[in-house]
Image (tube, rainbow, N blue to C red):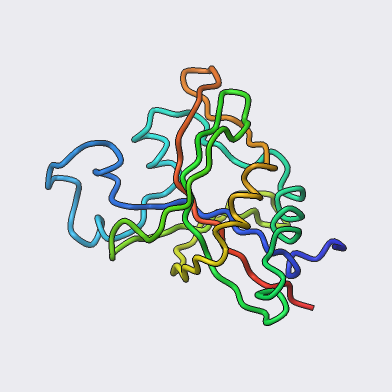
Length: 175
């Protein structure tokens, strides 16, 4: 696979629905409607869940390789990309115990944030992305998630099991 990020088919996407819903807070005082329409940042999700560390893939290169390995061949040949929404149960050691493909976004106003690393600084970079769901990637997403190990969630300094919803975005490699 070389070292080119442009050939990557991996995208780790956090769902960023209304932060108030994540926190179980139904008050209107969450700010202006413009503030509520912006996706929640990772820091806001951590604050709402009480986690000091959200689960992330432990080995990003292995995750990328797994996504390419399980990319549906017919879609790869046609250079068709797409995303699939999954719910994951991750244990306190970072192993995925359960993967469920979610048939469709839970709300029409779903917002997502792409979390990637800046190749120069290694810092996390977040940006809003538009979902392009394709159910044909469901089987591939299940296979990828069963292979990948995560850095577990941490709460109060201890690893904890965590259920999370994420989107896997499959993109054909650029050559």
